[in-house]
Length: 288
Image (cartoon, rainbow, N blue to C red; front, top):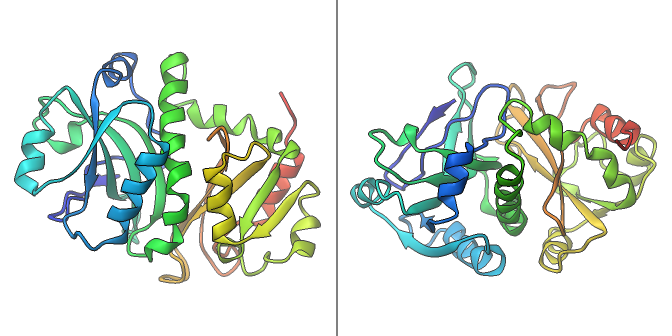
């Protein structure tokens, strides 16, 4: 994947074609513990993202000391050289092997240091938040959970050095059967138009689920409901109809554990949102 760095200070992040989760080395994760995390705001002060990420960090960030700053490009170039700082930053990413050149925004934690190029900054945690250019209301209500996932991921990989980019998604997906004891929250706007009713979903997934509003999702995140897991769908939200990736992530509202991570290319047969095979895979999962 290619890294983009724009004047609006979308940061730097690399993600490979198989959507491997970023994992820091033991040395990088150890260094992170002694950093102050800089929450990078975009230069446009009126963007809803800036207001939402401030509120989110104040509620949900507890893994490190933090400060919230807006940088010009030159200021960021200087700040990123500081090895005592880490950065929580929204990055725009595209896959250079993807002929559509589709761009996605990720929320990432990166380490500062004396790196010549932005692309060399270690990325120790990341999660897709939206298809680049979609309205912020499609993901803003879930930022609290995504921030907590990043922290949980850093703690998990710090405590388990055998987890690497090559096996981390296998580890996460091995826990998917645990959602059978919880209620899966599904937002109507995130569902596949061919699978957007309780009857259709129940025919594929016999466990507890509920079609809810965005406000109900945010409330579950804020109260850290131990009985709820949430679908986080990342797609073009109607900006493109096909030949674009759709990511599907299920995360616990309380523990911020990732229980499921999958993606597919959107087409007429495989529309945006959870597919029948996703629900079937979740239903058939066995506890380890």
